[in-house]
Figure 1 (cartoon, rainbow, N blue to C red):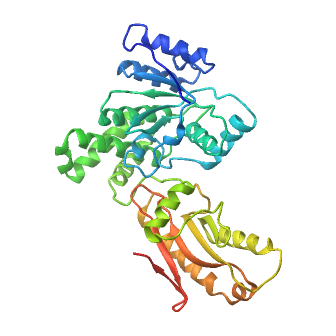
Figure 2 (cartoon, one colour):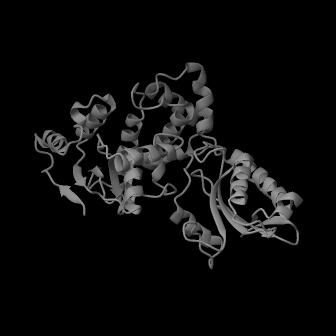
Figure 3 (tube, helix red, strand yellow):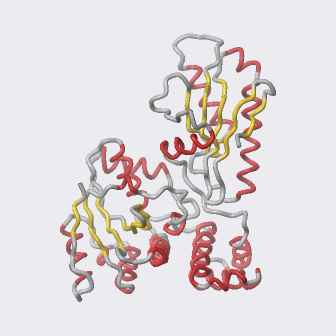
Length: 380
């Protein structure tokens, strides 16, 4: 059960008392953190008079899905999440029993959590709860009472601060990260002043160049014009990590309403979430083949959910490149299905394919094997 701490808002000592309460709970007080980004975030919160609600044992299962329309505003990286980081944090918090040093910070919108600071920590606690562990996660919920647009505006600003380079904690910002942040701030500009939607391309590029030079002083000036041009390309989007199993299951039913995606419980059909890369696929099917107890030339049916890339975290932000890679991998899978050696040896036969949504401007695509044409047919 969530344990909520309330402190009267906007008294002169409000933020001082919040900081003390955080420290008393054995977390680092952001006001005096050695990580300067935490201090800068705290100063931003104070400057904008943002309320703070401290919750211990928070229910992180209400985190918004990555394809939510607001999600992109609360993430400062072009690639939003890293599964390996969550694996490491899960081991630290729930297997090695190491305490979490800093509380994540986020905003609630329509009962869903959007976490701009400590997203990986929050995802770690969500995983733990779903696996039946005792919840160890606390969080600072910001901005109760603010409008949705105010929460988005502050969430983006705080996420951008948290992403600033720090020698001890965060990887340096790449150009894709900066372009993503600039694009999000532009969208907010247009929401507050719709006349900017009618700006010419030159006006938009000029705005982006000014934003980058003002906010990202580390960028090589010779790169600014190129980056500004790419920001307003409809081909570029924010990448999304591999969706969770329940999200895949929900979208599976969009195409096959009477079927169930459940890799953990399925016994009659092989179901796998895989990387969309030929070598990774070959390793996977070879492992399945070699793990059989008895040889048989019979091919077991297999369904797969695919995220294109050599790894699950592959950062492909170009929609045209993503669609091209999907078609290329689909062709590879058709050759696999019809390869006489795999067929006669009893390797799994791919029957249904779901390409998952992996950028904010792409969508799920589904294909089904046509045994007559020996090709995959796209599902409507």
